[in-house]
Length: 226
Image (cartoon, rainbow, N blue to C red):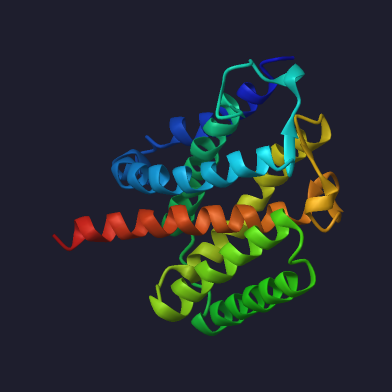
């Protein structure tokens, strides 16, 4: 039982690592563009993770972790910010290769506007919930920067990848919250769940992936333009 969270992490990343060597996608050649962004994003999210743990936003069931921790965070939780982004960037890269259909930029703008509207409403009505306010505050900032400031061209592909990534998201987070390995304090979120998964988790993951893929695209394109 104490290896449960560790095994979930390993299973999350196993197939993306193995399939990285597929002769068509050759994702392993892009690994060097992933690590810098994952390091920056991981440190940022780990800061909030430590704070959330100290503030009682969530807690970890000691029966399902190996007991190695740093700043109050289990080793498995720190690995989560490596395994999940890696797997999702793999999904993003595969879809870019195999799916030739491109979401219209107008539709991309509509989705971004909906994310902004949702974020503003959540911040207005649930400003006193720490998990809710931080999640939607960050999402608001990221979408504003990427859609309207930097005007990145890859957001249309990101939203498709995010929709596909929701499938493993429900499997992984479903296990983490149903066992439960991670328990959430409903006083710090809106107390609405999809199954056992807090509503905020969907957008916490979106913000996490936006940062990771944003850095991935930045370092990848920087290499191309050398």
